[in-house]
Amino acid sequence: MPLKSLTINGFKSFADKTKIDFTSGITGIVGPNGSGKSNITEAIRWVMGEQSARSLRGDKMVDVIFAGSDTRPQMNRAEVTLQFDNSNHELKSQQENVTIKRKLFRNGDSEFSINNKNCRLKDINEIFMDSGMGKQSFSIISQGRVEEIFNSKPVERRSIIEESAGVSLFKQKKQQAENKLEETTDNLHRVSDIVSELS
Ligand code: ATP
Image (cartoon, rainbow, N blue to C red; front, top):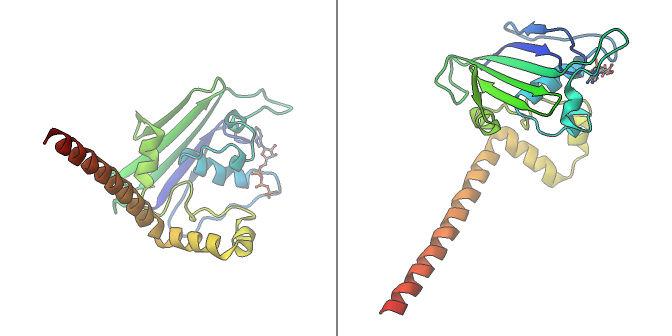
């Protein structure tokens, strides 16, 4: 599921519409301190559904909208678009090309879309499920995260390995199945109580 392009408009330091095309192989982004390299990875996490303003180095979500500079006024909207080549169908979609878009307005209104069709955050989360990508995945390792992984406790490190190996999805499914089983057992008890009351 190669990334094809990222388009950023009004997100953090990107006041001008900026498109990055990812060709095959490795793409390196270089620039002086404070030039916006981390903002690019944050834009990717944001469009994939990141909901924590803190993890995007802000206090509230509208902090991701271009806040203005000495030479230009603040903007009222941040918009990020990510295009994937989905010919191997690793993303949960029948489409060969998948474009996801997120918009946020200064009044707090927000929009998600998949292939230009408005959708919910849940749909964005679902399309990445099982793909090894997604905002929580370890396909994005931000600054400080490597150190954090090395310094983490064995139990925490285990959960990182499980996530990378794709085990956590099955653990989640197992938990859901167990909850359902418990619910069904409760229902069966209730039914047998009613039956014994009636007989
Ligand atoms: P370093 O190499 O030091 O890690 P970097 O290239 O990763 O730097 P970033 O951290 O991505 O740089 O960008 C920081 C810049 O983004 C700062 O100049 C900051 O003022 C600017 N910035 C962050 N949020 C906004 C915003 N909402 N509006 C305008 N500029 C912003």
